View 1 (cartoon, rainbow, N blue to C red):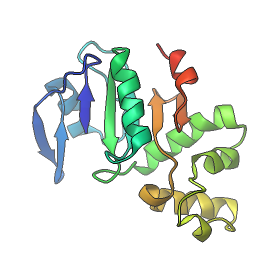
View 2 (view 1 turned 90 degrees about the horizontal axis):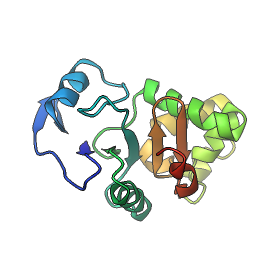
View 3 (view 1 turned 180 degrees about the horizontal axis):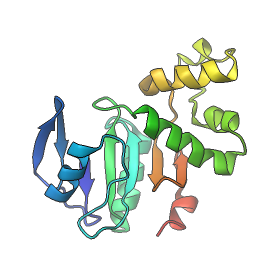
Amino acid sequence: MHFNSGTGFFYNKTVTSKNKNITGNSFVMMILNQFDDIITENIYGEIMIQIFGTNKSFDCKTAQRWFSERHIPFQFIDLKEKEMSRGEFDSVVDAVKKTAGSRMDAIEEMTDKKSKDYTSIAYLDDDDKADKLFENQLKLLKLPICRNGKQLATVGLQQKTWEEWK
């Protein structure tokens, strides 16, 4: 995980917890060591934007650059290193559901239909589709997923929505 203070500066402290390397300031490290799926606060007590994605994704790099250029603090979670927990996944689905309409519409919006693995879930029923999406996050999620607290989340590049998060 990488923590960005919004100024383009990355903290250098790395801690290994539960066989995972976590980078960030000591306040955030203390919280992450105690809880696995919480909303992270920066040293000023502000809720930070979370960006779920991969380092190789052009859209994820674009999202990181967008927030950095506006000095908006964010936390980048590389899904290759640490996938979302079930609680985080459900929280993101619930947040996307608020704009999508229903839970199934949110699952559909979060699914990358261009993925070569999409055919494996295209014809599943609703509950099975959500479970498969959770189990295969790296292969099936449309990225980036940006979350602002537990109430707001977007899928893909949504700069107009992010403007309202300032």
